[in-house]
Image (tube, rainbow, N blue to C red; front, top):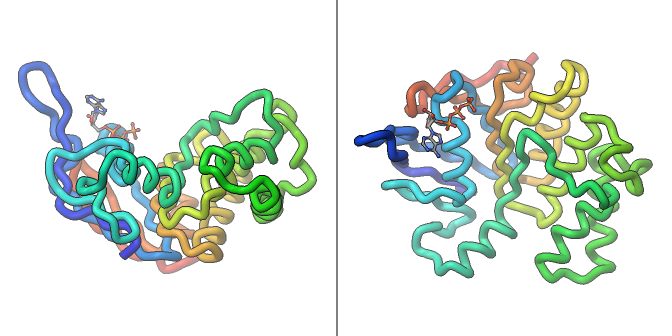
Length: 229
Ligand SMILES: Nc1ncnc2c1ncn2[C@@H]1O[C@H](COP(=O)(O)OP(=O)(O)OP(=O)(O)O)[C@@H](O)[C@H]1O
């Protein structure tokens, strides 16, 4: 199993008590499959992603990414796991305004100490895969919202992560662009073999998901396997 969340409980301080954001949640996601997480606002979806990304340590339960249990790693091994094994796509692309699309991708890999020539060809190949080969030298303000989100997705894939975590990627997009981004995420998941978790309000996501789970009040329930379009 490429991503395993096993019996996760996460609480936050809340006045005198604690608020349970994740209540004994378990989820496994295999390579090359996409799990959509739906559920009302405040039900714990972002918390689930933060735990899966190893950005937040749960009160109890295990997070296993590509065979490594996050809690047992040293700080530096945990940082490496986060950088290499996990790709994160947030709602807002957060691109650096002064860099071109190509450079946004290159920065990720340079931070990881990879060789410039190899980095350049990987970045060009990924921009091509997300349909932006012709826009490689544009800066964020010269791209549409959908194109910016594609750069964001390509950037998250730059270090060839085993796990891809995506939070509401279509919320800033119109229906058509949103649908195209979801199709792209489904295709990249299969091509690149990532274990993908997609948090979304967008019903269009149900068509690209292998599995749909629902969060309600911090608990996860199976919402069924979509039967396709
Ligand atoms: N840092 C925090 N400190 C305290 N409580 C928090 C914190 N982050 C989230 N919460 C609470 O935990 C619960 C789950 O929040 P979370 O952001 O995971 O929900 P969500 O399903 O992602 O919501 P939305 O769809 O609105 O983004 C909510 O009740 C929220 O108010």
